[in-house]
Structure formats: structure tokens, C-alpha cells
Length: 188
Image (cartoon, rainbow, N blue to C red; front, side):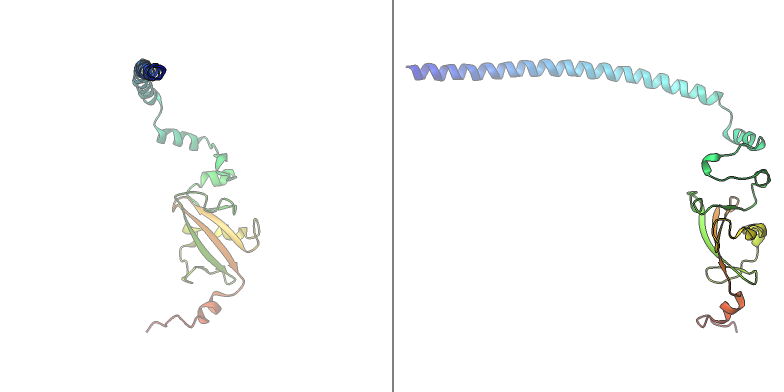
């Protein structure tokens, strides 16, 4: 008989535990859902009011192009770019200017191009084709800056063309280099 009582007791504990578990599970799910709904309601009201505030602020702000033009006219310098331009360079924004080796390639959208400056004052690209419009691309004045950062290289940025140029100094003459290339075919 005692085993029947023990089994009945165990069965009663199991059924009671299951019922208690279900009761508290439903109770806390209901509390959690209430909390989630209240948070959603608060954030949905907040999103609408924040969006309305952002629209009001945007209407009050000047046009970005007008703002940039005003800064340029007042000669503000962007020190975050790391360029230390003097007043003459600020006036000639469209002109190429010398940059430090650390600044070379630092602007994401700019191409990086390597050129060679030979001792006979010829500038050529990496295929040894002569660069004709030096003033527009790197500026003749920039070629006088060899030795400022490195003895045999120079770095020039052209904002108009969105290019950074690495110019390597070669002590040889351009004519000697071209004449020594056996792989180039002569024009017939």
C-alpha cells in the first residue's frame, strides 16, 4: 500500500509542477508582451517626432554648395586633410600642388599614377610615353620640389583631375632609355 501512496504522491507533484509551470509561463509571457508593446509604442512616437525635427532642421540649413563656397571665399583651411597649403595655393585650388608621401593615395576617389622625370627634363609615364601637358597635369613649379620629402621622388595632387602623382627622379636621359628598349617596334 505504501508504494501506491508514493506513486500517487509523485504523480500529484508532477501534475502540480506542470500546471504551475504553465501558469507562470503564460503570466510572464503576458507581462513581457505588454512591455514590448509599450516600448514599440514609445519608439514609434519618437521616430515620427525625430523625423519631423530633422526635416525642420534641414529646411533651416543653408545649401551645402553655398556653404562650401562661403568657406572657400573666407580661406578656411581643412586641417584634417593634413595639407599645409599656403595662401597662394588656396587661391589656386585648381592648380596641382605638392603633397607629403603620407598624403599620397589618401583620398579615396583619386587615381594614383606614377611618372618619371628624366635628367633631360622629360616627364614620361610608366610606358615611357612622354607627358605633353605637364603644366596641366603636375605643374612645372612642382618639379622644383625634389628633396623636400625624399631625394628621388615627389608627390603631387591635382584636385581638378582627381589624381595623385608619384614622380620618380631618374638621373639618366630619356633618349638613352628609349633607344635601349629592344622590345619596342619602330614605326614604319
